[in-house]
Image (tube, rainbow, N blue to C red; front, side, top):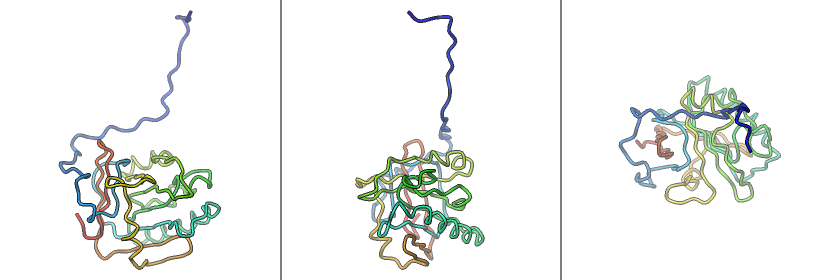
Length: 207
């Protein structure tokens, strides 16, 4: 039988804020035309709209090698510093868990290395499919600074996709073996319905 006099302890591992009803979306983000979007996911964290974003920093899968994740972190830090000095926010896209302490599971950036990102996106590759972190490593920063966090699953469909054909058809502002930095003349817009877990990033010039 159970000892009814024994005291029990309950520990909270993580509390995620409830979406403010005043920030609800009237539009259905899943119904927006796919051709107008660079990405959509039904695995989104965050709430609201982030606009005036002209830059994307993308860790390409072309030459991806998990043994080089630490080097990728250094390169991302350099780009982040430059964009911060220019007063530019950006979208950060790459495979694996952002901020993982294990470089085999993702690129081991710290928050100061990516602090100007307004949207952080986890992707996967054919030979690199890691269980998503859903922003766990940066949760306090995401909520404090209103940063959006998306996961694009490996099996993509109308509701979960990243239009890499569109992205690969654009000339990068900067490119090295692992990273591509894109800059657009018109702004992209991030919209996240946190209650439904749906998020989108428009193509440049979209709204």
